[in-house]
Amino acid sequence: MAETRVTTTGVSVLAVNATNPVPKARVTTTGVSVLALVPDGGTAGGTITTPTLSVGAVTASSANLTGTAFSDTEPTETHASSDWQVQEAGGDWSVLAFESLADASNLTSITATGLGSETNYEARVRYNGSLGAVSEWSTPEPFTTGVAPGTITTPTIAASAITTTRVTLTGSAFSDTQPLESHASSEWQIQLAGGDWSAPVFDSGADAVHLTAIDVTGLTPDTAYEARVAYNGSLGATSAWSTAEPFSTSPAGTSSATRPERGQLWPRGNA
Image (cartoon, rainbow, N blue to C red; front, side):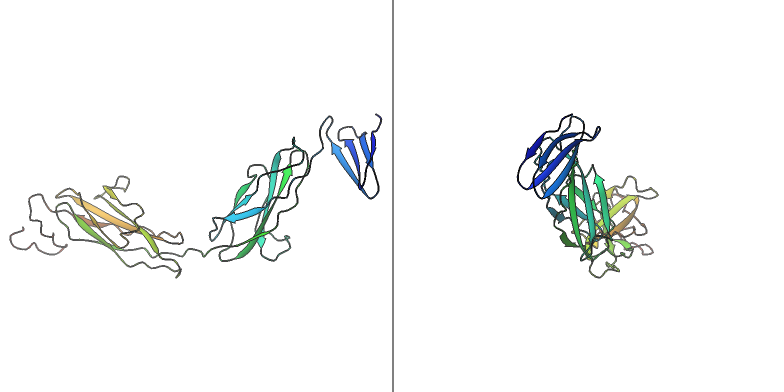
């Protein structure tokens, strides 16, 4: 097949059929020579705009990386995959903390995991086109991971001020091996005695108001219950559930006076 030769300024390009390497077109000038392999009957890749990268939702061990939209001078070339890398700040990209190459699923965003806490990192991305073009790497984006959560001491729980339908639950003080982690919320549960906690009669969910004490109403008179509590930290740690604390509500028709603690006697007139 005859070549088509075009002369211009600055660049020499030779387009070759990748299946049957016969020159399809030659552009000749002085300086640089570029060879483009084109699929039989196909189109050469364009130039992909260098993406920019932003980092968000940083935790002690992960970060969300987001690149800009794919853009290419060749309108028929689509975004085929992306290359993502994270290294400790100041490195030469030979030792990586996270890498995902030729990723066809996470084209413009990915969560980098397995990072160390309280560490300075930088991330970069480049885009790969469906016709073979590859962008330049983005400018590295620095970020610092957060403080790792600690271990919360399992709380204890006590039941008091018990009436026919009400109880006050009190947990022990919050304690954590990570001094920067604070008490964010507590989870309080009550179930009928002997249950497996699959159907609690009361479940506070993550309660950020009642951290170490809560009043629960709406219970059934003369009924045996048990209660438990777990603590949640501001950095993501969660304690184990406390040992279940048993208690029983007062029989219906008794005085509204507080039911005595276990081992105590009812005041005269309230028996």
